[in-house]
Image 1 (tube, rainbow, N blue to C red):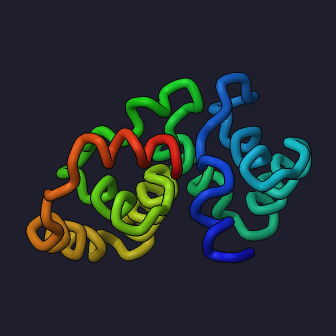
Image 2: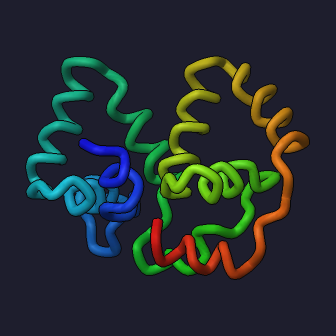
Length: 137
């Protein structure tokens, strides 16, 4: 997959009408597959690898629902993920998921880097850029 497709194709969101939290259905739309395929992959990750529940919970907590995209760029915890999203073009839900996954898997060491980024990243993004990024990300 090309870089442009990765950053601009579909949003990383949860579906409004999914089974549990809408994660599998939202990701199925994002990747262009049937929801049952995504659900089967999730079940296989639970049975064979054992980390599917953790990943699902993190996705459910970090990905915005598709009906709440207008508020997805609001600052959550210091606003670092929002700043990274606006600078890189990655969807803010994906950035939040990666941050949460690294924080859990590194036993908190990622939080040190997160706090450093809070002080290093400038807050020079205008509100019009935030609104434009909501349409293009």
